[in-house]
Image 1 (cartoon, rainbow, N blue to C red):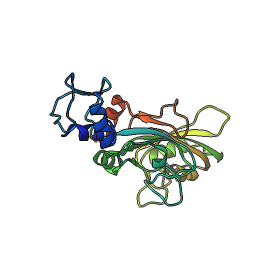
Image 2 (cartoon, protein in one colour):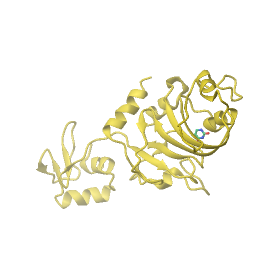
Image 3 (tube, helix red, strand yellow):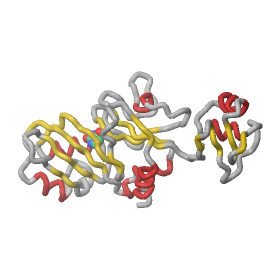
Image 4 (cartoon, protein in one colour):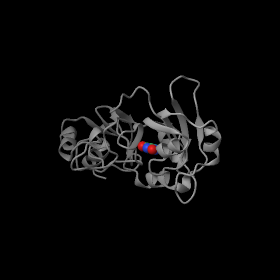
Length: 235
Ligand code: URA
């Protein structure tokens, strides 16, 4: 690949900025200052920009702490979307799955379509953990019912889920599910006697929401987190 294209793709610069960086002597190839922006980068060669190695990452992955009030779509003429919150430096990212507009918490954004497709497929049973707050009273055997699979009005009952009820005066709960039906948590909670007033996703496919991220903030996934995702995508 041409050096300027490599830099544009993996250092997320424009071609113009990439060419300028080479002219300014800020780029090296295997430790030697690069002189030609149209020179070739071959497999295994180390490209540095300002002394920092620029790896040929095929895909990007971000963790967003989704705030309430934005929709999980790639574009919308009226509403603000999760994509509007992330500067993906020209990458065409999309959300891995959907959270309702009023749901907050962990949403992964990526341009890795194949992995997203696998992780969202019902065949892979990817675990998602939610915390929710509710009004009303959950039925006494809510934990057992969730574990058995609640009928939420679909052809088949929801898959067995883990409901955890913390020993606290607040009406809150934690629910681990392995599918992603429309409004699933709210519908399951409703069947158990609770009206969800707040919903937050704290984990997806073994990747846990970074509590340092304020709502609306995001960061790239760590290598370890990407490995978790890929493992989950192996089924
Ligand atoms: N379940 C819901 O009801 N809403 C979400 O946003 C996610 C899961």
